[in-house]
Image (cartoon, rainbow, N blue to C red; front, top):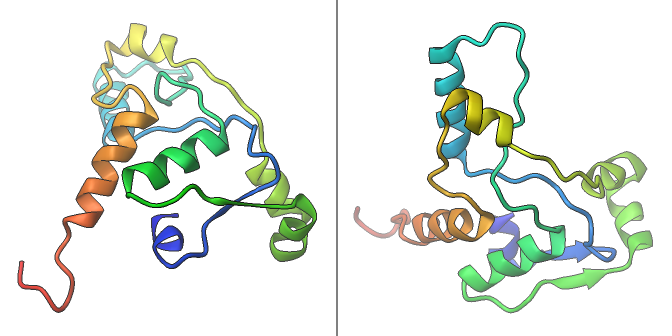
Amino acid sequence: MYQMMESGRFGIFGRGDNYIPRIHVEDCASAYLHAIEKKPVGEKFIIADDTPCTTREFMEHMAFCAGRSKPRTFPRFIARLILGKLLLETMEMNCIVSNDKAKRELKWILKYPSYHEGLAAVIEGLQNQPTLDQPP
């Protein structure tokens, strides 16, 4: 998504009012490590951050963190033509989840409790990566 934003091919299909669970990769790895250590055989856990957000909120915050303008909005019928019905339906999934059980039973603590902190850290890292024409 970051590369799409950098190249100008960044936008929201439809209203963007659907909720999709988010999590920073470090927090996801931490949850898996806690589960391996605790060995809760037969248990199932939701691994997501603490803050439900819509696709629009996420994309607009990503643009803000990168110092870009808000993403464009494309009509849903255009998205269906470009992406196809199944991919569009997947992108429009609407799901609010709770990670309370994972935090309670695994004693798991998130480093990035919301997409706000997680996106800021990821984008800062991406922007500070050396390019091929820059020495590290």
